[in-house]
Amino acid sequence: MNTSTLPTFPPPADVEMSLDDDDEQDSPHQDYRELLNDERCVNLLDQGACHDHPDNTTPDNHLIWQANIKRCDKRVEALCTEINSRLYGESPRPLPQVIAVQDMCYKQAFHGIPGYHVWYLSDGQFTEADYEPDAQHKIAINVSQPWLPPTSITAQQANPRLAGAHESLSDLREIAFANEDTAIMAKSALLCISNTLSSVQTMVTEVLGACSDAPSELISAKKAFSSVQKSIRTGVNSLSDKSFQFKAVPKMHSVGFYVHNSIPTTSWRVKTCKGANRELLATLEIASLDAATATKPLVIHNVYNHLNKLKVDSLLSYMDSCSDHSILLGDFNYHHQDWNGNERTETSTSGKKFAEGVKAHNYIQKTKKGAITYSNSKDTSKRSSTIDLTFAKESISNSVGCCEVLQVPGFESDHRVIETSVKRTVKREAKTMPCWHKITPSKFQHHLKPRLPPLDSPLDNEDQ
Image (cartoon, rainbow, N blue to C red):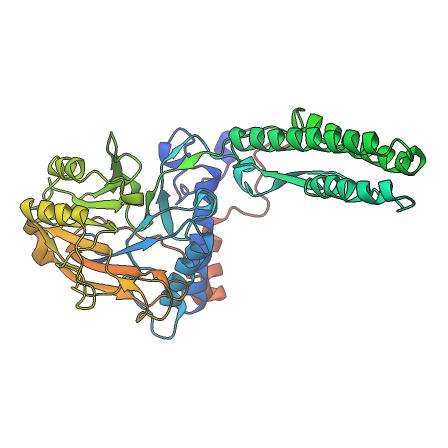
């Protein structure tokens, strides 16, 4: 074939994808999150909105949410619903760039929030088998009803004894174990079964000894109990079989972050500390584009003081090693007069130590005194407190705007969602999508035709 006769085409406008490019090697889970985000963009396009390139150097009013999930996936769904309402509601509102969460649910490893990257830490890797850890392995034991007709006085006296034995066996009719149960719990259950069997055998022996004059009336009961004991032994053996195996579910640490996709993954990272606070503290660092703060990222310390296990001295020492442009937030479970309302005046010893510590390290309280961040129910007059707190380092305190409690459906009781605004210039990027619905077909064909080869052009294959 004469190559000089082949038509020449202009180079393609799109850049060829390189599989060696790290940016192209997304995980399936990441692809799914990007798909959801694309669907959201398509919906915006259908509404007549197009994406424009943002000005990456304009100072933004960043919103930071903090929310205690209470290990409940319904609360994650509530956050998604609130975000959707801000996007598609009658009066659209800004979205949070960062969501700091505490007391995370294991399902957050499988379900993200569309439009956000998720970061969490766990001891072990979650797999498909961990998706439903509440699925139970059950052993059903059919207990027949031993019945002894009162044909004699001796038999009548023996019948309550047999009835007691039957009741003990009936308690073992169904035994259920969940994946998250420990081996100690299983051994305890096996010991209970063993003791019950021994007790029943003693009861039957005593009855047979007392009713030697009426063996015919006891023969059916004896057979019934022998059958029950056999079925229980079969059940116990199945517990020790390979069909029943304990699988330790990976333990998710208490704190995590959602970071909006508009902030490139190369612009943020999460650090964790060592020691006693390892599972209770994580730090998000977001790079800054401000000339004056380029070397000092915005730092967000996320804390969950679970069961009062937080080591305050270690926390303060750790924060000293980070940037001065720091925000400290989380569920601290501390009571102190600095943030308690007028109706609650008590101050705990740990709360006093924490309050004195943050002041000594130049952290300014941003939580409004008396703001109800927790209540036992929707009725805040019964039992409420201020335990979800926000502090800002003195060096950036003036950059921190509002810090308020949001009324988010699904968070009306227990811990509320807290919103904090921070003025900060960070690199932002947004996905762009063609506005195909705005294209005029005739104009599109007019511009496309010169770029296409003639219909009689040879094909680039072995046949032509």
